[in-house]
Amino acid sequence: MKGSYDPPGSAAPRTARRAVSLAVALPIGLAAFILLIIGGIFVMVGQADYSAYTGRAEAVVSARETTTDVRGTGDDRRTDTDIEVYVDYEAEGQQYTSVRLSGLNPDSYHEGERLTVAYDPAAPGDPVTAQSTEEGAFDLFLWLGVGLLAVGGVGGLIAVVLLIAALRR
Image (cartoon, rainbow, N blue to C red; front, top):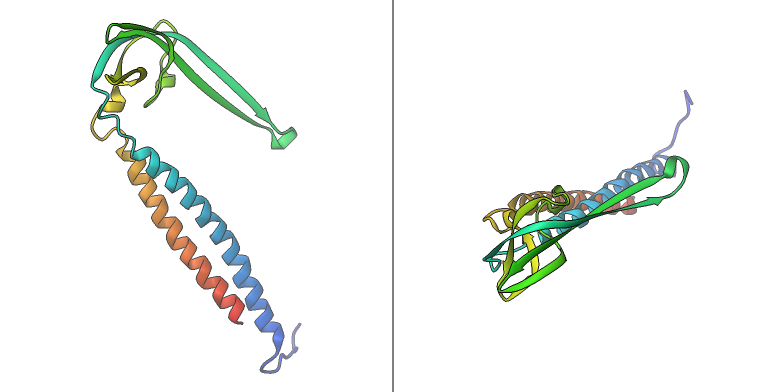
């Protein structure tokens, strides 16, 4: 209001600054927390090591299962689709049938398609896509995760500073 006056030491401007600091700090803190979680997951995925998967076998995709999960209703409706690929192959003198394929992009293969799978000779029943064993295959995940952790950490520090400033006012 024009002409209104808050005398020095008045609580009104202090309360407004505190509310603004809190209103800014809380979303920044929440975003930082989410970035830290996602970054941590990416770092874990980026550290996947399939170097022991030195065995190779020719495989055929025996099945491709698609699972669709619908959650919520109306505007809040979400659909999540999960694709699992199963392969048949022979390794270490043993036949493996309908074994779930893991690694990079297993869902890019379709039923009847032939591919080379990699496996650990000590555990040949756990195949991965051959590209998963290439050096640096998961480096992108690692570096994205490190970046997300750094941004989340800085955001978290900003949120803490803003909260401390708000609580001191």
